[in-house]
Each structure stands twice: as C-alpha cells, then as structure tokens.
Image 1 (cartoon, helix red, strand yellow):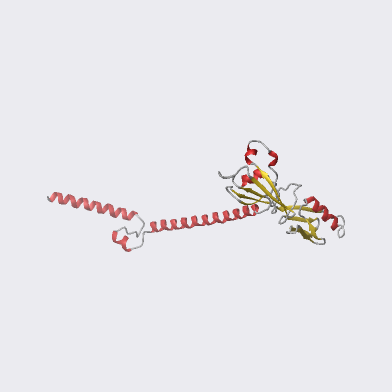
Image 2 (cartoon, one colour; image 1 turned 60 degrees about the vertical axis):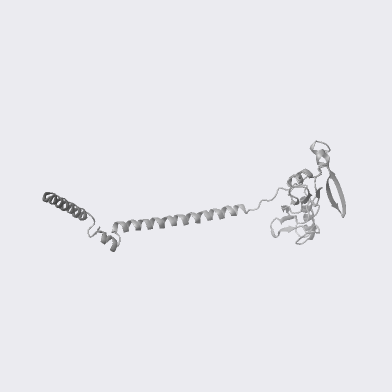
Length: 251
C-alpha cells in the first residue's frame, strides 16, 4: 500500500513538473488557472483574435456599404437612361385630336421650340402665329401651315413637328366582355382588335348583335358587327377601323 502511495505521489510530481514546463513555454505572465480565467481579462492571444474578428466585421460592413453605394449609382444611371423618352411611332397619315401632344421647333430659335397640346377645340397656341388648327390634320399639314405663317417674321423658317404623345385615340368597349372600359390606343384599331383588348366575349354575349356607335358632328351612326359570321370567314368588311370616341357595345 505504501508502494502504491509512493507511486501516486511520483506521478503527481511528474505531472506538476510537466505543467510548469508547459506554462513556462507560453507567453510570459500568462496565467491559465481557473481562478485567473474567471477574475482576469482574456489572454492576449484571445483578445487579439477578438480584435481581428471586430476588424473583419467592420471591413465586411464597409464592403457592404460600398456595394450598396455603387449599386445605387448604377441604378440611378439606368433609371436616367430609362427615363429618356422615345418618340412614339406615328403613321404619317395619323390625324391629330384633342389632348395629343406635339413638339414644334424652329431651327436656331430656342424661343420657338416648345411642346404644345391640342385643346378640346382642336387648336393649339404658338408664338407669333397665335392659334393653329390641329384636329383632323396630319403632322405635315400642320408643319406646312406653320411655315407659311412664320415666313412673315422669319425668312425661310426651318420648322419640324413631331408627335410626342398620342392621347386622343380612345375607344370604349362595353357590355358582355371580360374587361369593359376605356382604351387609350396609340394606333388605328379595328373592331376585332378592340374586342381582344377587352378580353373577348363572355359566354352569354350575343355575338351576332354587336354594334359600333359613332358620333359625327353631333349625329349618331350605328354599324352592326356579327362576330359569329366573321369567325366563319363571312362579311370581313364589317371589321371596320374604329375612330376616336367609338363605342363597341356587346349585348
């Protein structure tokens, strides 16, 4: 029994020597005892690691901030490019109506370059020439009229007229269609196209009793439209082009 006790004491002494040697190999002044860990700040190596983590976290936040900043700048540039308006493609034979918008410019004269809107009376105002008729006229007819009037004030005026917004060509589809309402269209449209814009007929629509109602100079005109016949390839001429303000009624 005494031998066992002596052996135990010998092993304990050797373990203590090894522990002392291990502690001496660490950073001078570094205390790894449990009480020291509980009562003192973390060792310098762990503090350094925490500092590195803090710096890495700060660097990550900086990179994220720069990414957001650059992304916002690119988005702003793309928005700026996207907001550059392109002129609509308008048929040369298109006749203007109320609310249409035009850009009228005279070369080398900024004061005679302006955007004008066709008023409900079909006219628009322009410097030097006062009111100009626009309704039911083409762009070329308006340009020629402006050149003729401006010649009194400007020798050989170089005038250009362009439609920037088509807002007068509205048709209405009412009755038993899936999406009844007002449709603002930037091009000439026939009856079939208008019905397509309205989502087509409902199952209970009277397809052969459709009517196009048009008002011309205060007089109402009615054009019948038999969708069932047209679907079979008959009476194709009834698919007329709609005029601004036409109402397609589906009972």
